Structures are given as C-alpha cells and as structure tokens.
Length: 195
Image 1 (cartoon, rainbow, N blue to C red):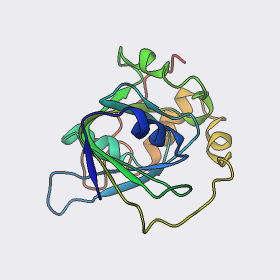
Image 2: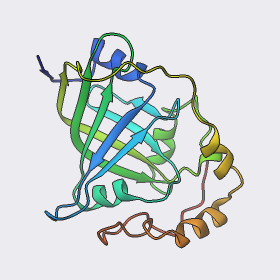
Image 3: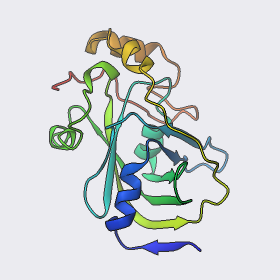
Image 4: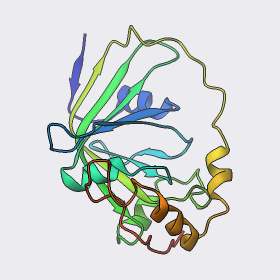
C-alpha cells in the first residue's frame, strides 16, 4: 500500500501543497530524551522549495524543541494527512536546518512565502528540510474533518511585539534558549528583523 518516491513532484507535490496543516517530529540523540511532535498550519507558511526540499516558517511559541533538536542532530520528519478527499498520508524523513534571521540565506528563503506577512507572528527562523526518504501510506484510519479557517490569535498576540520585546519574551520562557532536555535552542537575543 505504501510507496517510496525519489522526489516531491506531480501528484505528491499537489497533495502536500493542498493540506491546511502538517506535523513535524524531532528527537534528541539521548535515548531518554523528549520526542517533540508539533502541529503546524498557518496558511502560506509552508513551501515546496524544489523536488528534494521543503520549508516552513517557524514562529514565536512557548518552546523551541524543533530548533534545539535540529541544532543537535538535524533529524526531522514532516507529515501530512488527508482529512478530506481520498485517504492519504505523506511523510518526508530528512535533515533539517534552522535558518535564523541573521543568516545570509534568510531573505531569499523568505521570498518563497509571498502570501504571508511574517511581521505579526514573531518569525524566529525558517526550517528547511532536505528529504532523505519520501513515502506515502493509505491513511484509511484518518478521520474526515473540515477546515474552516486559520485562527487569528497568534497574529494578534505577537503583532504587539517588536524585536526587543520579542527577545525579552523569549528570555522569560523556560524552554526557548534551552530545550526541555537542556540542549541549546533559539539563539538569543534575536537578531533584528529585516522583513
């Protein structure tokens, strides 16, 4: 039932780009470390860069587990489920890279997200995933659910922050500069935004 793909193109790319949400999972190298699973899905915050790479915008949140795990070992899986239409699950297993706001690649990568204004969301980084294994499976056990619209709470909450206040907010949070397991997380203070 499952199939392995060499690249993200055609029907596979169409399916991925049509999903309103996706999930990421990462883990530290330590066998007793905390596995992190995160739902993502602000319309326009995900992009297929090419046949081997995808990327998403990493916004302000209460932890930085994904960033910490990627900084330590780079392992990440991204998953999409069909909640409408024919059943399907697609996973991209690969290597992730956190591209921070002061990285020379940041501006060019940000151009892949023309439909979203990153300013009100406290954009911290762009996560780029290079695929090592691309697979789909049946998704027969995934329920039908309807997508109504994005919540506007995140944008409203972080729209009142500038670079200095956002850095202060992150500094106060327990698991931003350091992960739950003590790994280096988001580098603070945040570099100034140039978007």
